[in-house]
Image (cartoon, rainbow, N blue to C red; front, side, top):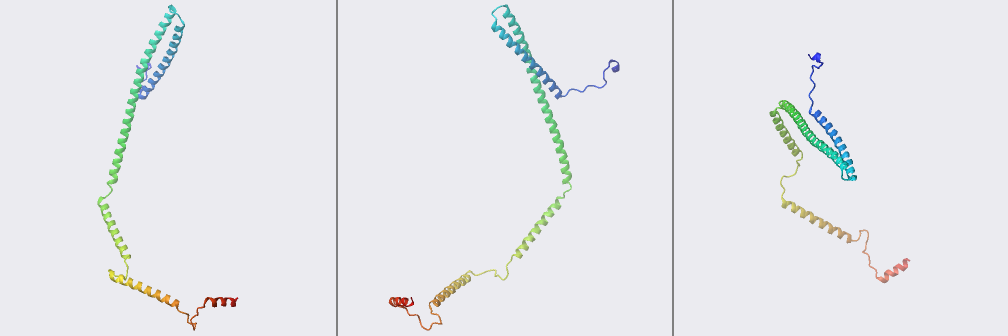
Length: 213
């Protein structure tokens, strides 16, 4: 029967939500063009009525303007309905896309959870704890070695503060005596001079200067 009437055995694919949105957008664009055309006609009728006097001619123009206005209102109502339909379909498409993304996220999380369980199953917690304790022991031994290497030799553990102060005072006294003896030596005459120098009076000093000049 299908061959006789020329119908195809395969069914046509059902339109998707995006196909319906595209079709509705096309209808919206067509209606907007018609409304724009009717606006032009109404503007022309308005101009004609402003130039005509009351009478049969003006009444005929008014009737045509009323029919055009009714047609415009009808298209505007259709445009509002189609716009609302487009909004509803776009909302449904957005919800569908969000649901698809959510399902993909859930699948990815399931796969990640499976991989984590597989990897963590290879880890022995007891071995990690033992390794941690071994590291603590090694660090403690390293600290003991450093303290042993930094230990001073031939230094008494305890020093008497009184003995240290007495030794410091003795060093200060020795320094004062050495300074006094040094100053006393400076005031003495050298060993190669037999007699001490004689101080000259002012007159003798001037005479010695003239003689040397």
